[in-house]
View (cartoon, rainbow, N blue to C red):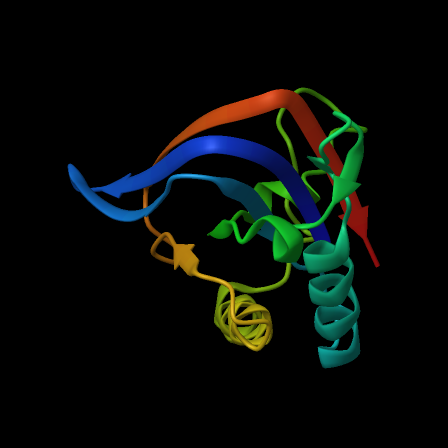
Length: 145
């Protein structure tokens, strides 16, 4: 399981010219799964994500989590995080979990985040999405199991 986490001032996801998810302040999380990911991986990375101290405190030090700042999360499924580009110029996605399984894992991940009483917005799984991210900082962190 892999997460690309971006601190955001405001972000949204649009499908078929309609905004389906939007946050004003918080984190945009691009979420990818590989074949051997488990529920334990989901729980571990969800906990790591919500406790990740990448928001500024009163001294402008990154010392606060999404929980501390009462922010929201925009969660976007993204199988391309498991692109293999070692051979040639066309990425291979053999390391990405099959869509039917990944959909279940993605739903479980978002459900796990909701347990922390955070506003969770999402895109639409396996849809063509336009994601607008206002990356604050910029701050981008990669989390993996």
